[in-house]
Image (cartoon, rainbow, N blue to C red; front, side, top):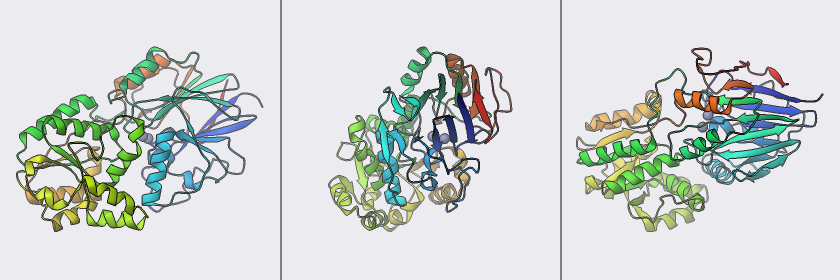
Length: 414
Ligand SMILES: [Zn+2]
Ligand SMILES: [Zn+2]
């Protein structure tokens, strides 16, 4: 058999859980091995049934450190090498060692823009703009064919210039574009992180008390947005231990705010500190104490603080007298849909009790519909294979050369 075969084992008709295989006669690679977003927390055995585990794989290429792209790594044979960006590798390893167990594996790293050989495949990673840090699009060449995998991306974050550049100088002769379409059929906000920063500045300025904000510690663009808005309004951003460690881990990946900077404080809460000690990370907690404050400090000078909030912090906050008031505001800075899930419900109830003002400020980690169309047009691939979306069978105006696959259906790239 010659040629290149593409099989989307999972993601043709859902958001996340990506598992995609490219195979030649001489080898195969996987693009992501994600956990489906709707899988119950403890569920195992989630690998797509069409994925053959009995034959070797030259590499599992992880586009970015989101669970819906790497969450099933543990279920793959340990001998399969795993490739990702260096910072992405650190984040995946750190998250596993705090919240689970970090499996021993053969981890290898690429650098943006530098092609690597993986079996018969030539892989060129292109750093891209997404709500996960160190996210890549991947150009895969083999058997004289060329496939571009978009991973997850957007064009309105702090790295939008990278996507613009790829669009203005696209790789030539792309046979297949595998592209995400998370925001098709939705009306999620897609304003720029810079505009969002101004919205936060306004909120911080008009609120007499504290502004509690809930966002993902690994959404570094959002941390930067909140930090910059805090500085502009003369407030201090208060982060938890986990966020502090994420930022410390990425310190050599760029000029990111972190513990020790003016306008940044780490709140050391009892349960989090205990979890860290249990996981053998006591030294980190002690080191952070130099930049830390007790939750009790947040009960004083309310107008000074922008406070990270998540349900697991509530009990320790309350025990130190940190209770929402009518002078406070709270901002849910994640997808609005999560507010209906247990964590969101808990947060909302806590703030409602205190009469704090809710102000939902967020922008999507994924491209707007207009940007999806513009990107597909710029790449102008011979075949366009839609993935990572739930509305690809709806209005497809603006997308050309669509080849609609089903999960597990092989496509010979001719
Ligand atoms: Zn995803
Ligand atoms: Zn993602």
